[in-house]
Length: 338
Length: 292
Image 1 (cartoon, rainbow over the protein chains, first blue to last red):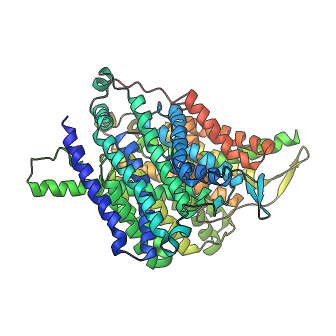
Image 2: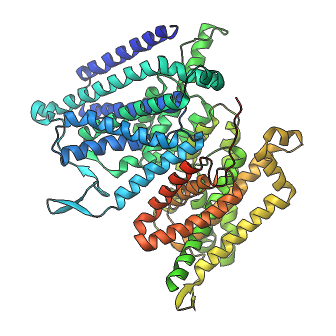
């Protein structure tokens, strides 16, 4: 196995990164900053899964935020209606997302690239519109009508991880480590997928579809599997998001949110291993920095997006790789750098 | 009968506006192979252009539509020169250009917000008055919209089918290498396509805002519908896109009338999903045979 070496290398980097994040609360005490890092974990998970399915699997999916919302909604509903413990709800929500991905995939994945993008987008938007415009009361909560799927306001204030009781003032640390655990599992599995058999299959398909097919690699089957994997972790992230913010609502489907995460993927580098995570950090820093400019905030974000894409095609990952190659001397191209 | 007239009129008005918004999108997809995620702002900017010309500068009302066309075309040209031209032919163009044009959309939306604020202005470019047909009161405005949209689309069709530069556009869309070898300046063709698409979107913006009101976000909804229409028709098929827009407009109006407004758009999307599963290349799309 020529790739197992790359796999081990990336896994090592991942473990180091996770260790740093695990030790971070010792240095960082500020609750706002910890909250921002938790948000970073969520978007980094979604971005890495988006990169997995789009950059490696070659599926132009715009349904990723749908899977995210699916996880959050499933958790909210299981906790709110079913009275389920949130710890049990998390993995089930992930599985529900994965199941919905298999369903959507069965309908979409035989289509050509751009059609997949629009069909997945259409499905996500359709669900969002149906949720927002639903006004039939399912039950009354404090004399306020609650729709079956939460309607335009969504669910909020349901039971969370319970650290507020357990850790009192330090409750955010409990949430931090829960989200970090989900993040760690996601990143490790993603690396195994990218640099293991599935990644190999996708590289083979990309290099020569005819030859790969004749060797028994079914693009449809591999894409379905990776679509489900990415949906599982995206849904799990959504479920944890619901548990952290005690919120699941139609704003999770918003196109602007989807564009923000997609830009994290693109700025970081589509098809790379670490690009999406770096991209998430960069975009979040830009957003944070732009907050000082008040009204001009979104203007700056839009400009930054355009500039990144125009001047840095391939994203930060490709730029870093070019830099590394130049430093190593031309000619030698790192086999496993991407 | 009265209900039928009402539904047909609403459907045709919707269809006419959708057609204008989506034909440009189809044209861009067909020639440049890109999703223009800034289409919503082409629409919005056109509407604001007309508003400024009539409501602020005090031009005569009949210049409203030309103003919208012009501003739309201008934005299309600027987007092409500053961004699209730089990125054409690069690896991952299809995905990168989506993000880039989405960025352009964000920038433009915020520029409009800064310049005009979020106040929902009324579009001064409209006509009042109505007449009666078989017991149904019909205002002139929707009829005007249908007429103008039909006129612009026929004009675009003539441009594409009968003129020399229309032939160049179609040739570029069919086979860019062959077109280049025949002496078509594809760079210029791209610019023309972006200008036409921008102009059509700008006109759509003027018409759409005349039925509701102006706002920086007004283009979002028509853009989504335009995407849907392009996909149902088969990406890049301009004539099919126009026809599909009208049919889907009628379909939406019917659903809205019988099942309530909330189901109009979801039903449209549901129809799209069914169509794509049944015909993976859209209604008018030709099956592309890929040889390995």
